[in-house]
Image (cartoon, rainbow, N blue to C red; front, top):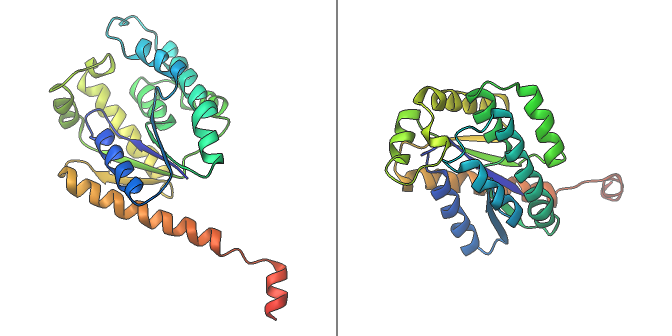
Length: 221
């Protein structure tokens, strides 16, 4: 199963993703935890270029293509092989970030971004996406208490567009997205994530166990 965590900057998604990983590992689940951009040697090098505050002149199209290049590498080198081995893969950000940040945030064409994304990922879609939602002002206030990157330095209006974009994406795919109120305590947020995660695992298990076919039906008759 492929699970992703999404959210505006300062939403707490990384903390929540790592807590879920620890919880599932304690339960004996085989897990690969990774992040975007990053997760492989090549992708981590691209990450440094994207997030460096030195690169203020980076064009929006360059930003998209760099994110997509890092994504293509991690999908081919890490995510698909892990899924093929039957492992749970939990990724801190994935292509919904591109649609939210570069699409809704920067105003780039969403259809073009989806086409680039499909090419980079070869059509790999998450089974479950936790979206941790917080207002832009709260997220930025949290981020500015620590180390910031190039994207954090954009204005609050940009981050508000990103948040609204995420909410629109979630409304469009309610079967994949789980929207979590990130303004609550860390413990409350994690409790809801764990409950929703276990519900999904039970559903997946039932699909595998219950696979009636024509032969079974004939024998039963």
